[in-house]
Amino acid sequence: MLKRVVVTGLGAVTPLGNDIKSFWQNAVAGKSGAAIITKFDASLFRTQFACEVKGFNPADFLDRADVKRTDSFTQYAIVASDEAIKDSGFDFEKMDPFDVGVIWGSGQGGMETFEEQVSEYARGNGQPRYSPFFVPKFLTNMASGMISIRNGYMGINYTAVSACATSNTAIMDAYNYIRLGKAKIIISGGSEATITPASIGGFSAMKAMSARNDDPQRASRPFDVYRDGFVMGEGSGALVLEEYEHAVKRGAKIYAEVTGASMTADAYHMTSTHPEGKGAAKAMELALNEAGITINQVDYLNMHATSTPVGDLSELKAVHALTGDEKLTMKIGATKSMTGHLLGAAGAIEAIICLMAIKDQVLPPTINTETLDPAVPANLNIVRGKAIEHKVNVAMSNTFGFGGHNGIVVFKKI
Image (cartoon, rainbow, N blue to C red):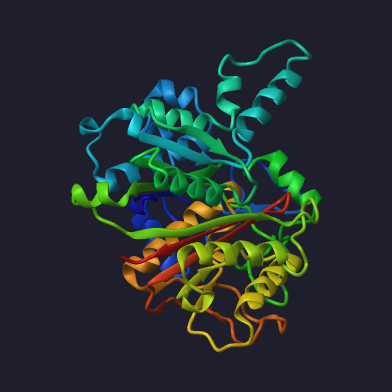
Protein backbone atom coordinates (compact mmCIF):
# COMPACT_ATOMS: atom_id res chain seq x y z
CA MET A 1 0.00 0.00 0.00
CA LEU A 2 1.35 3.41 -0.99
CA LYS A 3 2.16 5.87 1.78
CA ARG A 4 0.85 9.43 1.95
CA VAL A 5 3.44 12.22 1.68
CA VAL A 6 3.33 15.67 3.25
CA VAL A 7 5.56 18.75 3.41
CA THR A 8 6.67 19.67 6.93
CA GLY A 9 9.50 22.17 6.40
CA LEU A 10 10.50 24.99 4.07
CA GLY A 11 13.66 27.03 3.47
CA ALA A 12 14.70 29.62 0.90
CA VAL A 13 17.57 31.76 -0.39
CA THR A 14 16.19 33.94 -3.19
CA PRO A 15 16.44 37.29 -4.99
CA LEU A 16 13.51 38.42 -2.82
CA GLY A 17 14.95 37.37 0.54
CA ASN A 18 17.24 34.86 2.18
CA ASP A 19 14.67 33.10 4.35
CA ILE A 20 11.05 32.02 4.00
CA LYS A 21 9.58 34.98 5.87
CA SER A 22 11.25 37.72 3.83
CA PHE A 23 10.86 35.82 0.56
CA TRP A 24 7.13 35.36 1.07
CA GLN A 25 6.54 38.91 2.31
CA ASN A 26 8.27 40.41 -0.72
CA ALA A 27 6.52 38.04 -3.12
CA VAL A 28 3.11 39.00 -1.73
CA ALA A 29 4.12 42.67 -1.91
CA GLY A 30 4.93 42.29 -5.60
CA LYS A 31 8.59 43.24 -5.30
CA SER A 32 11.02 42.68 -8.17
CA GLY A 33 14.44 41.17 -7.50
CA ALA A 34 15.94 42.45 -10.77
CA ALA A 35 18.81 44.93 -10.96
CA ILE A 36 22.05 45.58 -12.84
CA ILE A 37 24.49 42.69 -12.31
CA THR A 38 27.03 43.29 -9.54
CA LYS A 39 28.87 39.94 -9.59
CA PHE A 40 30.91 40.85 -12.66
CA ASP A 41 31.12 43.60 -15.26
CA ALA A 42 28.30 42.84 -17.70
CA SER A 43 28.40 46.18 -19.49
CA LEU A 44 29.43 44.62 -22.81
CA PHE A 45 26.73 41.94 -22.75
CA ARG A 46 23.40 42.15 -24.55
CA THR A 47 21.70 41.58 -21.17
CA GLN A 48 23.28 43.40 -18.23
CA PHE A 49 20.87 42.67 -15.39
CA ALA A 50 19.57 39.71 -13.39
CA CYS A 51 17.84 38.72 -10.15
CA GLU A 52 20.80 38.20 -7.83
CA VAL A 53 20.73 36.91 -4.27
CA LYS A 54 21.47 39.96 -2.11
CA GLY A 55 23.26 40.35 1.21
CA PHE A 56 24.30 36.71 1.39
CA ASN A 57 27.56 35.98 3.22
CA PRO A 58 28.30 32.24 3.39
CA ALA A 59 30.60 32.83 6.37
CA ASP A 60 27.50 33.73 8.39
CA PHE A 61 26.31 30.14 8.05
CA LEU A 62 29.29 27.92 7.23
CA ASP A 63 32.71 27.49 8.76
CA ARG A 64 35.78 28.67 6.86
CA ALA A 65 36.64 25.20 5.54
CA ASP A 66 33.17 24.61 4.09
CA VAL A 67 33.12 28.06 2.47
CA LYS A 68 36.45 27.33 0.81
CA ARG A 69 35.44 23.94 -0.56
CA THR A 70 31.91 24.72 -1.80
CA ASP A 71 30.51 26.57 -4.78
CA SER A 72 27.77 29.16 -4.28
CA PHE A 73 25.08 26.77 -5.53
CA THR A 74 26.01 24.36 -2.73
CA GLN A 75 26.14 27.16 -0.17
CA TYR A 76 22.64 28.28 -1.15
CA ALA A 77 21.46 24.67 -0.87
CA ILE A 78 22.96 24.19 2.60
CA VAL A 79 21.47 27.41 3.99
CA ALA A 80 18.00 26.76 2.54
CA SER A 81 17.99 23.15 3.73
CA ASP A 82 19.17 24.18 7.20
CA GLU A 83 16.15 26.46 7.45
CA ALA A 84 13.77 23.78 6.15
CA ILE A 85 15.12 21.16 8.58
CA LYS A 86 14.78 23.57 11.50
CA ASP A 87 11.27 24.52 10.36
CA SER A 88 10.28 20.86 10.20
CA GLY A 89 11.39 20.29 13.78
CA PHE A 90 12.14 16.58 13.46
CA ASP A 91 14.59 15.09 15.94
CA PHE A 92 17.16 13.28 13.86
CA GLU A 93 18.75 11.75 16.95
CA LYS A 94 15.60 9.65 17.41
CA MET A 95 15.64 8.33 13.84
CA ASP A 96 17.50 5.67 11.92
CA PRO A 97 19.89 7.72 9.72
CA PHE A 98 19.08 5.43 6.80
CA ASP A 99 15.45 6.61 6.95
CA VAL A 100 16.43 10.17 6.01
CA GLY A 101 17.60 11.03 2.50
CA VAL A 102 18.36 13.94 0.20
CA ILE A 103 17.18 14.27 -3.39
CA TRP A 104 18.33 17.62 -4.73
CA GLY A 105 18.36 19.36 -8.07
CA SER A 106 20.58 21.73 -10.04
CA GLY A 107 20.66 22.42 -13.74
CA GLN A 108 24.22 23.73 -14.01
CA GLY A 109 25.91 22.88 -10.71
CA GLY A 110 29.17 24.68 -9.95
CA MET A 111 29.32 26.87 -13.05
CA GLU A 112 30.90 29.66 -11.01
CA THR A 113 33.78 27.42 -9.92
CA PHE A 114 34.24 25.93 -13.38
CA GLU A 115 34.61 29.36 -14.96
CA GLU A 116 36.97 30.63 -12.27
CA GLN A 117 39.28 27.63 -12.50
CA VAL A 118 39.44 27.49 -16.29
CA SER A 119 40.12 31.24 -16.37
CA GLU A 120 42.86 30.76 -13.77
CA TYR A 121 44.46 28.11 -15.99
CA ALA A 122 44.34 30.50 -18.97
CA ARG A 123 45.96 33.28 -16.93
CA GLY A 124 48.76 30.89 -15.97
CA ASN A 125 49.96 30.56 -19.59
CA GLY A 126 49.03 26.92 -19.70
CA GLN A 127 50.58 25.99 -16.36
CA PRO A 128 48.37 23.67 -14.25
CA ARG A 129 47.12 25.92 -11.46
CA TYR A 130 43.89 24.14 -10.57
CA SER A 131 42.64 24.08 -7.01
CA PRO A 132 42.38 20.66 -5.34
CA PHE A 133 38.76 21.65 -4.62
CA PHE A 134 37.98 22.27 -8.30
CA VAL A 135 36.33 18.95 -9.08
CA PRO A 136 34.29 18.50 -5.87
CA LYS A 137 33.14 22.14 -6.00
CA PHE A 138 31.70 22.04 -9.51
CA LEU A 139 30.13 18.55 -9.40
CA THR A 140 26.35 18.92 -9.72
CA ASN A 141 25.69 16.25 -7.09
CA MET A 142 27.75 18.01 -4.43
CA ALA A 143 24.82 19.95 -2.94
CA SER A 144 22.95 16.75 -2.06
CA GLY A 145 26.19 15.23 -0.80
CA MET A 146 27.03 18.17 1.45
CA ILE A 147 23.50 18.35 2.93
CA SER A 148 23.88 14.67 3.79
CA ILE A 149 27.38 15.05 5.24
CA ARG A 150 26.42 18.12 7.26
CA ASN A 151 23.48 16.35 8.90
CA GLY A 152 24.46 12.68 8.93
CA TYR A 153 21.61 11.56 6.68
CA MET A 154 22.51 8.14 5.29
CA GLY A 155 19.43 7.31 3.24
CA ILE A 156 18.92 7.71 -0.50
CA ASN A 157 21.02 10.55 -1.87
CA TYR A 158 21.40 11.90 -5.39
CA THR A 159 20.86 14.90 -7.66
CA ALA A 160 18.34 15.19 -10.47
CA VAL A 161 19.02 17.18 -13.64
CA SER A 162 16.26 18.05 -16.10
CA ALA A 163 17.12 21.68 -16.94
CA CYS A 164 14.41 24.05 -15.71
CA ALA A 165 12.16 21.16 -14.65
CA THR A 166 14.87 19.90 -12.28
CA SER A 167 13.39 20.86 -8.90
CA ASN A 168 10.03 19.32 -9.69
CA THR A 169 11.83 16.19 -10.83
CA ALA A 170 13.62 16.03 -7.47
CA ILE A 171 10.40 16.68 -5.52
CA MET A 172 8.55 14.05 -7.55
CA ASP A 173 11.29 11.50 -6.93
CA ALA A 174 11.27 12.24 -3.19
CA TYR A 175 7.49 11.88 -3.16
CA ASN A 176 7.64 8.53 -4.91
CA TYR A 177 10.43 7.07 -2.73
CA ILE A 178 8.51 7.95 0.42
CA ARG A 179 5.27 6.57 -1.05
CA LEU A 180 7.06 3.31 -1.71
CA GLY A 181 8.25 3.12 1.90
CA LYS A 182 11.94 3.55 1.04
CA ALA A 183 12.38 6.60 3.31
CA LYS A 184 10.57 8.39 6.13
CA ILE A 185 11.94 11.87 5.38
CA ILE A 186 13.66 13.32 2.31
CA ILE A 187 15.13 16.80 1.97
CA SER A 188 14.39 17.98 -1.55
CA GLY A 189 14.54 21.11 -3.69
CA GLY A 190 17.06 22.81 -5.93
CA SER A 191 19.77 25.46 -6.15
CA GLU A 192 21.52 27.50 -8.83
CA ALA A 193 24.31 30.09 -8.95
CA THR A 194 24.32 30.91 -12.64
CA ILE A 195 24.86 34.67 -12.73
CA THR A 196 28.30 34.27 -14.27
CA PRO A 197 29.88 35.55 -17.49
CA ALA A 198 29.45 32.23 -19.30
CA SER A 199 25.81 31.72 -18.29
CA ILE A 200 24.76 35.29 -18.99
CA GLY A 201 26.84 35.35 -22.16
CA GLY A 202 25.47 32.04 -23.39
CA PHE A 203 21.82 32.87 -22.83
CA SER A 204 22.41 36.37 -24.25
CA ALA A 205 23.84 34.82 -27.41
CA MET A 206 20.65 32.78 -27.74
CA LYS A 207 18.61 35.98 -27.32
CA ALA A 208 16.57 34.07 -24.73
CA MET A 209 16.81 36.81 -22.07
CA SER A 210 15.19 40.21 -21.92
CA ALA A 211 17.41 43.11 -22.99
CA ARG A 212 15.55 45.86 -21.09
CA ASN A 213 18.76 47.14 -19.52
CA ASP A 214 17.19 50.56 -18.90
CA ASP A 215 14.36 49.10 -16.79
CA PRO A 216 15.34 45.76 -15.17
CA GLN A 217 12.53 45.64 -12.61
CA ARG A 218 9.90 45.71 -15.35
CA ALA A 219 11.70 43.34 -17.70
CA SER A 220 10.08 40.04 -16.69
CA ARG A 221 6.50 40.40 -17.91
CA PRO A 222 4.79 37.03 -18.47
CA PHE A 223 1.82 37.09 -20.85
CA ASP A 224 2.45 40.74 -21.73
CA VAL A 225 2.29 41.46 -25.44
CA TYR A 226 5.66 43.26 -25.20
CA ARG A 227 7.60 40.51 -23.37
CA ASP A 228 11.05 39.94 -24.84
CA GLY A 229 12.63 37.12 -22.84
CA PHE A 230 13.34 35.83 -19.35
CA VAL A 231 15.40 37.36 -16.54
CA MET A 232 18.08 35.18 -14.97
CA GLY A 233 17.73 34.42 -11.26
CA GLU A 234 19.68 32.47 -8.66
CA GLY A 235 19.18 30.95 -5.23
CA SER A 236 17.66 27.90 -3.60
CA GLY A 237 14.45 26.41 -2.28
CA ALA A 238 14.24 23.47 0.13
CA LEU A 239 11.33 21.27 1.20
CA VAL A 240 11.15 18.55 3.84
CA LEU A 241 8.94 15.76 2.51
CA GLU A 242 7.75 13.26 5.10
CA GLU A 243 5.63 10.17 5.36
CA TYR A 244 2.24 11.32 6.64
CA GLU A 245 1.82 8.92 9.56
CA HIS A 246 5.36 9.63 10.74
CA ALA A 247 4.63 13.37 10.67
CA VAL A 248 1.35 12.99 12.53
CA LYS A 249 2.90 10.71 15.17
CA ARG A 250 5.50 13.33 16.07
CA GLY A 251 2.99 16.19 15.97
CA ALA A 252 4.60 17.95 13.02
CA LYS A 253 3.31 21.10 11.39
CA ILE A 254 2.01 20.14 7.93
CA TYR A 255 1.94 22.66 5.08
CA ALA A 256 0.12 20.40 2.62
CA GLU A 257 0.04 16.93 1.12
CA VAL A 258 1.74 16.04 -2.16
CA THR A 259 -1.05 14.27 -4.04
CA GLY A 260 0.21 14.02 -7.61
CA ALA A 261 3.31 14.43 -9.75
CA SER A 262 4.24 13.59 -13.30
CA MET A 263 6.81 14.05 -16.05
CA THR A 264 6.57 13.85 -19.82
CA ALA A 265 8.78 14.81 -22.76
CA ASP A 266 7.92 17.09 -25.67
CA ALA A 267 10.19 15.14 -28.07
CA TYR A 268 10.16 18.27 -30.20
CA HIS A 269 13.16 20.64 -29.97
CA MET A 270 16.35 21.24 -27.94
CA THR A 271 15.25 24.56 -26.50
CA SER A 272 11.68 25.33 -27.61
CA THR A 273 8.55 23.95 -26.00
CA HIS A 274 6.03 22.16 -28.19
CA PRO A 275 4.03 24.95 -29.89
CA GLU A 276 0.73 23.34 -28.93
CA GLY A 277 1.90 22.34 -25.47
CA LYS A 278 1.16 18.66 -26.03
CA GLY A 279 3.73 17.30 -23.60
CA ALA A 280 2.88 19.90 -20.96
CA ALA A 281 -0.84 19.20 -21.21
CA LYS A 282 -0.27 15.46 -20.79
CA ALA A 283 2.01 15.98 -17.79
CA MET A 284 -0.66 18.11 -16.09
CA GLU A 285 -3.33 15.56 -16.92
CA LEU A 286 -1.30 12.69 -15.45
CA ALA A 287 -0.44 14.59 -12.26
CA LEU A 288 -4.07 15.57 -11.75
CA ASN A 289 -5.25 12.03 -12.42
CA GLU A 290 -2.85 10.77 -9.75
CA ALA A 291 -4.22 13.42 -7.38
CA GLY A 292 -7.75 12.26 -8.18
CA ILE A 293 -8.99 15.65 -9.38
CA THR A 294 -9.60 17.65 -12.55
CA ILE A 295 -7.98 20.96 -13.42
CA ASN A 296 -11.27 22.70 -12.62
CA GLN A 297 -10.71 21.72 -8.98
CA VAL A 298 -7.31 23.45 -8.86
CA ASP A 299 -7.52 26.75 -6.98
CA TYR A 300 -4.08 28.10 -7.88
CA LEU A 301 -1.77 27.28 -10.76
CA ASN A 302 1.78 28.62 -10.60
CA MET A 303 2.79 28.60 -14.24
CA HIS A 304 6.29 28.15 -15.61
CA ALA A 305 5.73 31.33 -17.67
CA THR A 306 9.25 32.70 -18.12
CA SER A 307 8.23 35.77 -20.17
CA THR A 308 9.41 34.42 -23.52
CA PRO A 309 7.24 35.06 -26.58
CA VAL A 310 6.89 31.39 -27.54
CA GLY A 311 7.04 29.62 -24.18
CA ASP A 312 4.25 31.56 -22.48
CA LEU A 313 1.82 30.89 -25.32
CA SER A 314 2.57 27.17 -25.56
CA GLU A 315 1.91 26.78 -21.83
CA LEU A 316 -1.35 28.71 -22.12
CA LYS A 317 -2.40 26.39 -24.93
CA ALA A 318 -1.56 23.39 -22.73
CA VAL A 319 -3.71 24.70 -19.88
CA HIS A 320 -6.54 25.58 -22.24
CA ALA A 321 -6.41 22.06 -23.72
CA LEU A 322 -7.44 20.79 -20.28
CA THR A 323 -9.90 23.51 -19.27
CA GLY A 324 -11.59 24.24 -22.57
CA ASP A 325 -13.66 27.43 -22.44
CA GLU A 326 -15.40 26.53 -19.17
CA LYS A 327 -15.59 29.37 -16.67
CA LEU A 328 -13.04 28.78 -13.90
CA THR A 329 -12.46 29.88 -10.33
CA MET A 330 -8.82 28.82 -10.67
CA LYS A 331 -6.32 31.67 -10.44
CA ILE A 332 -3.05 31.73 -12.35
CA GLY A 333 0.24 33.24 -11.23
CA ALA A 334 3.62 33.77 -12.89
CA THR A 335 5.98 34.63 -10.06
CA LYS A 336 9.10 34.64 -12.23
CA SER A 337 7.98 38.20 -12.93
CA MET A 338 9.46 38.93 -9.47
CA THR A 339 12.11 36.29 -8.84
CA GLY A 340 13.45 35.90 -12.33
CA HIS A 341 14.06 32.39 -13.65
CA LEU A 342 16.14 30.28 -11.27
CA LEU A 343 16.56 27.51 -13.86
CA GLY A 344 16.96 24.24 -11.93
CA ALA A 345 15.88 25.89 -8.67
CA ALA A 346 12.74 27.50 -10.13
CA GLY A 347 10.38 24.64 -9.28
CA ALA A 348 11.52 24.57 -5.66
CA ILE A 349 10.78 28.20 -4.89
CA GLU A 350 7.54 28.02 -6.86
CA ALA A 351 6.52 24.94 -4.89
CA ILE A 352 7.15 27.02 -1.77
CA ILE A 353 4.90 29.75 -3.17
CA CYS A 354 2.17 27.15 -3.73
CA LEU A 355 2.56 25.84 -0.18
CA MET A 356 2.53 29.31 1.38
CA ALA A 357 -0.54 30.18 -0.69
CA ILE A 358 -2.28 27.16 0.83
CA LYS A 359 -1.10 28.13 4.31
CA ASP A 360 -2.08 31.82 4.15
CA GLN A 361 -4.87 31.66 1.54
CA VAL A 362 -3.16 34.51 -0.33
CA LEU A 363 -1.91 34.58 -3.92
CA PRO A 364 1.10 36.73 -4.85
CA PRO A 365 0.76 38.77 -8.03
CA THR A 366 2.13 38.54 -11.52
CA ILE A 367 3.80 41.93 -11.93
CA ASN A 368 4.60 43.91 -15.09
CA THR A 369 1.85 42.32 -17.19
CA GLU A 370 0.42 45.60 -18.39
CA THR A 371 -0.88 44.85 -21.90
CA LEU A 372 -2.25 41.32 -21.83
CA ASP A 373 -1.45 39.26 -24.91
CA PRO A 374 -4.74 38.82 -26.81
CA ALA A 375 -3.85 35.14 -27.22
CA VAL A 376 -4.51 34.54 -23.49
CA PRO A 377 -7.75 32.52 -23.26
CA ALA A 378 -10.57 34.59 -21.74
CA ASN A 379 -11.36 31.99 -19.05
CA LEU A 380 -7.85 31.97 -17.54
CA ASN A 381 -7.72 34.34 -14.58
CA ILE A 382 -4.23 35.79 -14.09
CA VAL A 383 -3.52 37.48 -10.74
CA ARG A 384 -2.03 40.75 -11.95
CA GLY A 385 -0.54 43.74 -10.17
CA LYS A 386 -1.46 43.02 -6.55
CA ALA A 387 -1.83 39.99 -4.30
CA ILE A 388 -5.33 38.73 -3.57
CA GLU A 389 -6.99 36.66 -0.89
CA HIS A 390 -8.32 33.46 -2.39
CA LYS A 391 -9.47 30.08 -1.14
CA VAL A 392 -6.67 27.62 -1.91
CA ASN A 393 -7.20 23.95 -1.19
CA VAL A 394 -5.29 22.69 -4.22
CA ALA A 395 -2.24 24.28 -5.87
CA MET A 396 -0.32 23.03 -8.88
CA SER A 397 3.21 23.96 -10.00
CA ASN A 398 4.36 23.72 -13.64
CA THR A 399 7.99 23.49 -14.78
CA PHE A 400 9.43 22.92 -18.24
CA GLY A 401 13.05 22.61 -19.35
CA PHE A 402 15.40 22.62 -22.34
CA GLY A 403 15.42 19.17 -23.86
CA GLY A 404 11.63 18.99 -23.68
CA HIS A 405 11.28 18.05 -20.00
CA ASN A 406 7.89 18.70 -18.35
CA GLY A 407 7.47 18.34 -14.57
CA ILE A 408 4.26 18.93 -12.61
CA VAL A 409 3.55 18.69 -8.86
CA VAL A 410 0.16 18.98 -7.12
CA PHE A 411 -0.28 20.02 -3.47
CA LYS A 412 -3.46 19.73 -1.39
CA LYS A 413 -4.44 21.25 1.94
CA ILE A 414 -5.05 18.76 4.74
